[in-house]
Length: 379
Image (cartoon, rainbow, N blue to C red; front, side, top):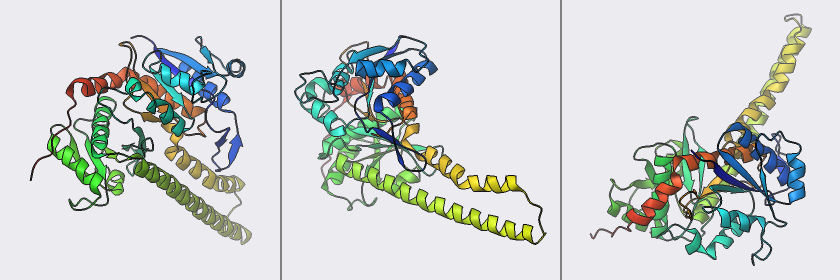
């Protein structure tokens, strides 16, 4: 097994992270990127790390870390340059994916990523692939389960054959990366009935049905079908997917807020009742117990936030990038703009895992030699 070259952009992203209390805290991207990437490098073998950005700033952060193996620095002064004149960090990252790097990570602007790729789609995309979707695993009601969502915001306008390609990508990811045999793919709509949904959904389902269940096991699915683990993936256009993602994030924040308030109110009521009983001589004072009770809301909320947080996954993946070298995978991760060091660590490890799985090779083989747009069945 050779080494997997993983490149990390240290310039794109927001200059802060969000703490467990929900409040932003200033922290430069380069600090989080270097700390998390080095943690992944020290944790697993077979990783060659390339950090792209301002050389002095990167080296300063590296000096603060215990680095067990050499790290390469690729100089860049800005995150994005539409003319590609100065060799920005994003341009160097994307241009190297599948050629010099097996995988790469940025937490910068999604629009800039798509803008850079769109101009040279035929150079970057796998054969027969017309759009590259952002895919992200999201935890569902069963704590041990997760569902793959795509497209989560890369392509605002899609046609039926695009969603059919996304569905095939999801099938390959779930089979090769997760080891799921014959995964169930859900085409997002408003109901399972044939007559429900818009033209895009109906035409996509016609393609899936024409392909046959032996090619892809697809069905109409509502968001709750994902929560109930009835499907392994949800496929939709980037506009709908991004709205869904933002709605899920907003609802999660609301529920977490109510949960914190309810737990705090309950704990305060218990403490008040306990103090009354102590004053009446019916219970012995136990200050240690009171302190533990006061810490309970924060402990519970911390666990909940960590359970649902994106840091555990690392980043979404832009699928469909072409490997331009027989020795390289082509994995591009897009992280949240406020990703912390642990998110960088998780994303780098995820790049390595996907490279080991042969996901790029299998997907590229499929779209090169096996993919064929099915002909719709006549009534």
